[in-house]
Image 1 (cartoon, rainbow, N blue to C red):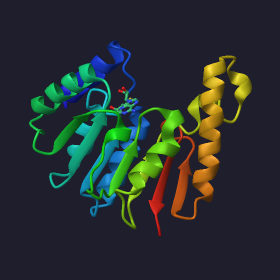
Image 2: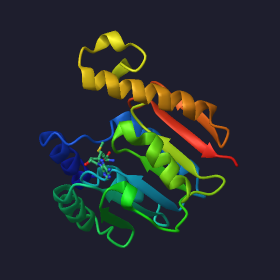
Image 3: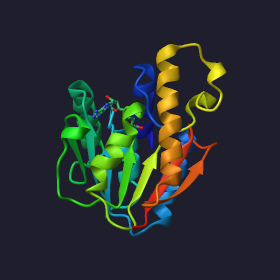
Amino acid sequence: MEILERIKEEAINNNIPIMKDDGLAFLLSFLKEHEEIRDILEIGTAIGYSAINFALVRWDMKIDTIEIDPSLVEVAENNIVKLVLEDRIQCFNMDAMQYITNKEYDFVFIDAAKSQYRKYLEHFYNNSHIGTYFIFDNLYFHGIVDNPELSHNRSTLQMTRKIKKFREELINDQRFSTELYKDIGDGIAISKRII
Ligand SMILES: C[S@@+](CC[C@H](N)C(=O)[O-])C[C@H]1O[C@@H](n2cnc3c(N)ncnc32)[C@H](O)[C@@H]1O
């Protein structure tokens, strides 16, 4: 769809990080296969590219998406209106940790600050049910997580150490059944809540 291509171009031209094509295609086919998924929560809207793509999978899905940067929320909201999806995608302009609701979601896509994954998971665990899928991207971070010699940047190394710790904890977390997809996106995990 032409509008989607333009949104993607807009993100690339403005250095706004959005999901990679293969990671997005993977999640879209996951959503198509799992018809029970109706309510989606996304942490990290940017300009609405992934949220819009999710909403276009099926008319019966609703998406709440949280973004801390007000200038991005403005662009996202305009993009959502362009696709006439404002009834199904709602943007919340706030720090994700301030988002409190008693709603339960079927699919929680965590795509904001990578060093905060643990905090987000615990915060939004309260908004899940048995069967909810939690999705995390960037768990391999350009290979640096497992090969720290690939980077000499201190803050990158600090962040990738945190990602590694989080990844190991997630795999061993008895509340979830976790599948890791190392070669998709930048390393995606899908964790299904089982207790
Ligand atoms: C990778 S981008 C999201 C890309 C988007 N999901 C897509 O693929 O189209 C991450 C976004 O998370 C936002 N973010 C970072 N920390 C946040 C926080 N604490 N609460 C809400 N949003 C946050 C950033 O401003 C950024 O726009």
